[in-house]
Image (cartoon, rainbow, N blue to C red; front, side, top):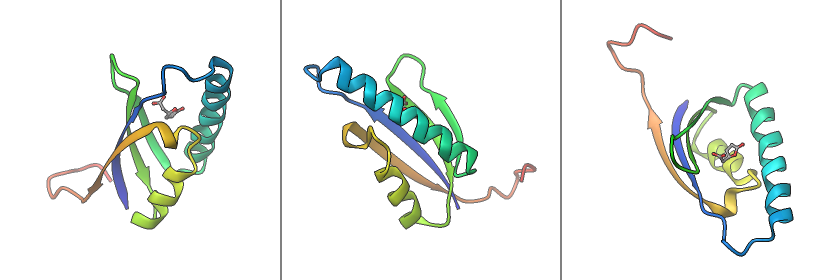
Length: 93
Ligand SMILES: O=C(O)C[C@H]1C=CC(=O)O1
């Protein structure tokens, strides 16, 4: 199943910069691994915001939830999920 996911990151202003750097490095590695696995199909920055629009290709809601929970920045994210269905006029697979 495909899911459109919006992630907005809100890191506390008083977070130690070194801790934040560690989280960002770990997040990048996790995001790249999930893309290589084919689970995280699209990852786009929302211009002007510390946020992204993503498309995940996973078995079901439970797998998506489990994956999102593994993201190092998960505790600092607001996440909005929209399940996607095929559009009858779409010619792309
Ligand atoms: O930067 C973000 O949008 C948050 C998060 C998602 C992927 C990643 O590398 O960081």
